[in-house]
Image (cartoon, rainbow, N blue to C red; front, side, top):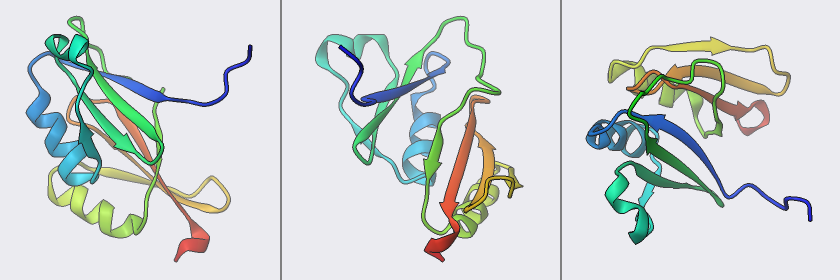
Length: 123
């Protein structure tokens, strides 16, 4: 049977950094934290809801950030989000190479690359 949809995307994070993950993904990006499955709670990490998908941050003891592979998150009001991220100490890099989208890249507190996209027709 072929796959029918994506359930979640997982990024890695260092052990014990859940508060920094909540501050970035929850407070700055506005994602809703959801409870981890009871059988997986002891492993640490965080889960967030983003539309119909989930974004999981899993603990990796030999952590190395994903510098190229990344999720692309659709956002509303990219300029306001960029301002908020930069004010919180997360530099962004604008990109206009994808037709139909304004984009910016940011790294989460752990160094993972995140792409932020806003369709140009939303403005």
